Image (cartoon, rainbow, N blue to C red; front, side, top):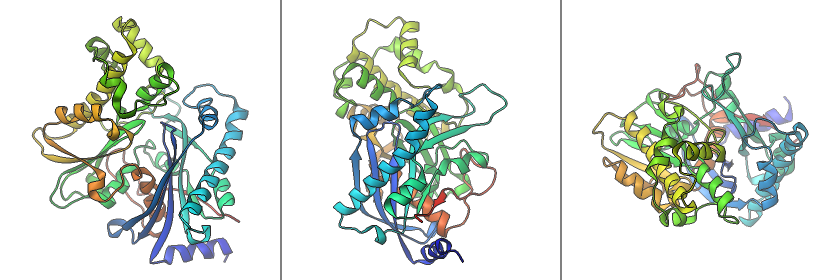
Length: 399
């Protein structure tokens, strides 16, 4: 037996595995690094978050990614170089985090790396009938493995697409494994660059779980902030939105896009929700003259209303549920206030209440997917379901 396979079997047979989950979202603010102790698999999964940090990206790092991010045409040489470079940088960030936690690399059983999404193309977004949905993340797993000396699983979304899904949202698997409840209706809302939720009806099976993207979470607000309020990268605490007034004409035009009329579940990326999308809506609604603060207030309400509309249309009217929030949007009190008023049947909590750090949640979820790939069985989920049960993640050995 090859030594790599022998080592993999040893990891799979462990009672408890130490897994580093990595997440870098479309907001591109930094790399979330979660050190998780995981035992069991499936519904018997138990996890403990041992440590968590976010290592902020430098301006140079962000500019490199933005040069190829969500664009139909990019320099192929730049894309090729960045795929390796991002993997190397992520590997170095993992080593930095481990050192700060007084952990040696050989204590870690594996790394679960989401990578950096640079293009997401669900079927609804592209018109080419010859092709199905597709998605692309960079930050090569082999480079992470060699840089850190740690077994690395990466490129999780490709298996989901290959098996008939659209590559997103993947939170459904971890949400079910960790958060389903026999008597409580739970909705797990993640407000990252793109907002998505998983609805876990009381006592549901994995096949009954519903999960969908709703549209923009923070991505459009972040892009507008970078453009009009530089050097700010995002609207911290919703301060800019709070200083403006919602423009109903612009709001109506933003919500009129055909994406919001699509049936559920659905998926989308920042390829749609960008500054060009906003400028087109402003031109159509004749709102180019309104202040930047009013635009931000309107974008904030836009995110909240499209999230709430999607939730309300997914549930039986009158359904009482608890909503547990995570992601950067939960730190925006303006958006959270909108959601509270728009979802009168929901009681709002942070995912902290469930023992899940809301900022670490997505990194934790990928650690769980890696654990299932090593020690679990193929999963078959509702929502954007694949046609067959699957495990996700490609294996990269350090040697």
